[in-house]
Length: 214
Image (cartoon, rainbow, N blue to C red; front, side):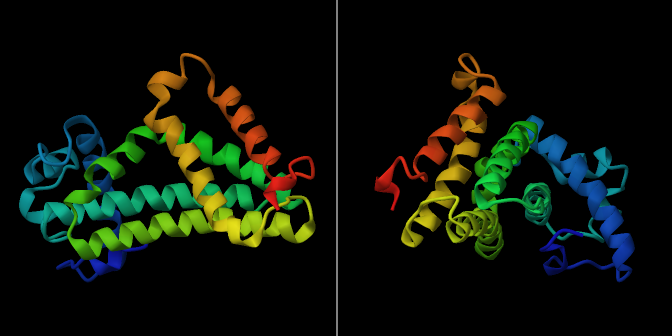
């Protein structure tokens, strides 16, 4: 079940059934929201796409905004789990950062439609739901803070402690840039070339050769 799923009321008390049905709803809604957009998609279309009657679907969610919240939370959960896989590898901070950046960029390409969906439609969520989604963004950024701190701690990265948070946000945005500006960048670089060059630029800022990083 996604992180924030329990915050969304359901008439069904069987949690395993709720999880299974909501996964159906999420998958159907993801496809529809990507194709048509959130506002042009109806709850009836979502129900039909996932093979449920409209009445049955409303036993698991209350509003279309609930569906969008589940979708955004699911996307963040996928991003976070795949990034944690890369960070679980043992090595120096520098090596871990290189792996994490490559994984982040790869996920940004593979889930680009879904990532765009989050940034296009999050504004349609109620304030509390929007805050929880933005919190998930901060948690993903914090994973890069951890690996940067590891590199500073083991001496493989040169970065002032006060710059760690900013650098973590920079890395997240560099991955998102491949999603948002791939229409321009893909004419000049493959994903592998983009990853290699951006990683080289990042590491240049955090090595002995660039004393300005301290």
